Amino acid sequence: MSVSYFVRYDIEVADLEGFMRRYREVHVPMVSRWPGLRRMVLHTPLAWRDPFPVNPGKAVLMAQLEFEDEATMNAAFASRERAEARDDFKQFPRYEGAVVHQAMTQHEVYRAPWLDGNEEGA
Image (cartoon, rainbow, N blue to C red):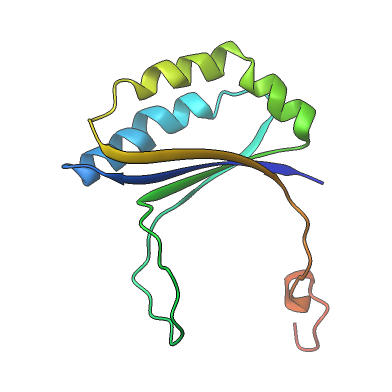
């Protein structure tokens, strides 16, 4: 069972394009050096329509960092590389809003058969 650490940016920033460029070009390479990090996925907003009333949220970015297990994640949190990434974030453009951090376990409860080639015709 893997674990993921999510960082959600519910923020407003004058230069969102500049914020995202710095995040991808400077911050991601720093985070990628965290010990034990299996993968990092950046989620960005998509214009979408839902026929049902839902709260669409206001996040401009959600970063997902995946680790093998909780112990590996906690070791990464205590690392010099994580401290460097935290210091780097102080250099980002000013923003208004909240940055939310949350760690979660991952349990796959459904997998489309075609992902594993188990569906006829696959």
